[in-house]
Figure (spheres, one colour):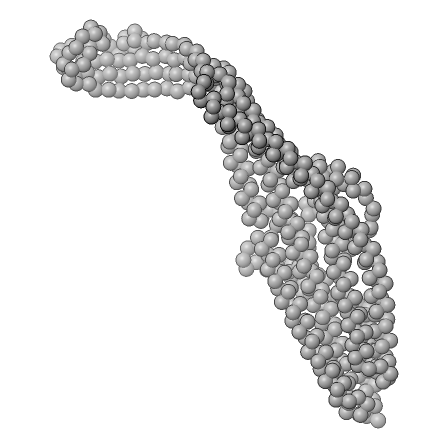
Length: 455
């Protein structure tokens, strides 16, 4: 009678455990004192702190300096010059224009200005090119932020998946250990044989391995997430896995409509267009380099002269500064002749780069369209699979519960029970996987529509 009561107690506890596992599937308790990171928070952090983002910010600063330098070419160049010279030995007297042999001191002053009147549009196109390059670097910064956020999203999804897989593996291990205890008790009563006990022990050992394997995969996924976020070493990071994120409602969308929005908002599409503009301006600069240039130059200069020794009294500094002053204005026309052979090659290379950039734009737009079509198709496909998998998981859960009762009553073998349990827990893992894939594809489609969900 005592043994019978023991068997009934174990069977009742096992049944309650199995039912609790079926009903509460992925429940997790985490300490309140730990700050939990959501997917969106991890993505936002990566978008601002990733190493590639920081480097891109310096590229923007460098491009801004280049633009300002190109803007300065529109203004005249102005320079001032001051010089002093001591001369001794045989030299020419500037007043008598004769040779002498005395020590003299010369002091000269000058202000010179120059402005380019015509250079074939090179100055204007250099500024446009520099401005386009700055816009491209700003867009590249956004592109790096998006890539970093998406990389963090992928890493978070892996970590979330493996963390919940650990919960499922723990549930499976708990079920297997309960079956092992029940089988050992039944073996003592002569209801089960030694092979059943060995089979139950093998199942427990396998479930322990699966649990440890998932824990290792979770650790690797967390390392990948930390690297994608560029979070400081030693700073704690705990992801929010208390509940499964709410799955967005399935919505059919026109792929061409999403593509039209992506052409305007997607940084990669914008970058391809900016590359075309930049190559176009570089081509215009190369063409302008083959044309004549006209520049205007002007200047004012004066000097002071004094003979040292010999009793010669030079005019005062103020008098010489006024009397020796001279001004000039000059226009220069420069026509390239033989050097144009090299410039033609430079123009051709710029033209080839321009044509290549236009082809790259077409290629990028086609690739973007294919990516959007793939993302929308995958998202809608996963939504259908999730609906079917939910029904399958519920059916597998009910079958496992009934088979557990049959095993307790001796109407089912341990192998058949384990097959039922494996099917049920495999359905839970597959459902979790499809749910995470759906969320990733949903967020990716929203990104192509211009909605950055992490901002």
